[in-house]
Length: 421
Ligand code: AMP
Ligand code: GLY
Image 1 (cartoon, rainbow, N blue to C red):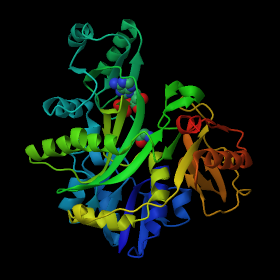
Image 2: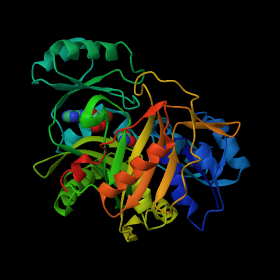
Image 3: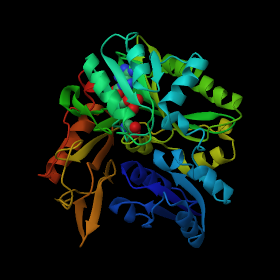
Image 4: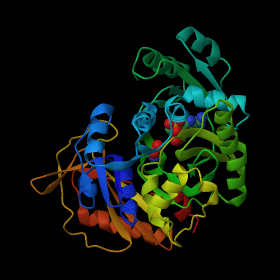
C-alpha cells in the first residue's frame, strides 16, 4: 500500500523511520518531508494546507492512507476533507481537533465533566478580563485561545503584564485567537501521556518528559521543546489509572455525548502534584520531540496500530515495548526561540552509524549535497540505552562531533531522572 505522511519536522522523520519498518507498506510519500525523510521515503513538495492540490497529488501517486503529523491541518479539517473524498486518514476530525485548537473549548469540556485542571476564566474582551483578573492570585497564566505554535502562553507575575499581553491578544497578535484564557498557575512536575484513540477504545502509547524552556535549569522563554526522554518514571501505575479515569475517559465520553468522536494520536499534557494529575493541555497529535523518544521504544508495528485504529479495533490490540530507554537533545539555531539565521552549513560526516543512534532531521534542507539549517529546531540526536546518564553522555559526544558553531543545545536534558541516581 502507498501511504503519505504530512509534515516536515523531527516528529515526522521519526514516524517515517518507524513506518519504514512495516512490511505492509509499499511506498511512503512525505509531504513535504525533510532531508532526513528523503533518505528513506519520497518527498513531495506540496502545500498540504491547499487541500485540493493535496488531493490531486494523492490520487496521482495512488496513496490509500494519509497520516497527519502536525496540528494545523487537523484543526483546519484535513480529515473531514480527505474522508469526504474517499481517502483513509489517521487523525481527528475538525471538531475533535478543537481539543488542541481552542483552549476555551478544552477548558469547557473540563468544567462540564469535572476533569482536574487549573482554575480558569475565558474572557471575550478587556472589560471582561479586568473583572475576572481580581479572582486570581499572581502569577497568572495568560493564554491565547487558538493555535499559536507554542508561543501563546505567558506566565505573568504582575497585573500590568496580564493587561499588556491580553490587550495584544485581543488586538490580533495571534490571528486565530479572539479570546483570552486566564489560568491559575499550577506548581508541580510536567509530564506527557500518549494514546492512540478510536471510536470504541484506546491504547496507551507511552510517557515522556519534555523540556520547554530554552536555557538550562529551566530558565528563559518557552520553546517547542529542547529535549525529551521516555519513559517518564513519574507516571507510575497508580497515576496512569488516574489519568485514564479522571481525564481521558471523561473527555472521550464528553465528545460522545456531543455525537462526536476522537480518532488518532492524543497527547495529554499534565502537571503532576502529590501524585495527582491535572490537565494542562491536549494536543491532537504526537509531541515533538516526544515522538522521537517514543518511536524507538515501540516494538509493535506502528502501521498495525494505525490500521487497528482505523477499524475501531484498538481494544483488541496489545502493544509491546523494547526494554530500553530513550532520550533526545535538540540542536537549535543560535537565537531560537527569537530571531535566528538560516542557511548555515551543518556537517554530519563525522557521525558513524550505530544501532542505538538516530540523527533525526527537523529544520534542515539540502542544497548542492550540503545540509543547511532551515528553522529554529534543526536536528534531534536520539539515543537508546539502559540508563539515562549514559544515554545523555552518548548524545553529548555526538553533538560535540557535529560541533555546529551556529547552534546551541541544552546539556542538562533529563536532569529530573539523572540527578536522582
Ligand atoms: P500549553 O501550550 O497550554 O501546554 O502551555 C505551555 C507551557 O506553559 C506548559 O508546558 C507549561 O510549562 C506552562 N503552563 C501552561 N499552563 C500552565 C498552568 N496553568 N500552570 C503552570 N504552568 C503552565
Ligand atoms: N513538545 C511539545 C509539543 O509537541 O507540543
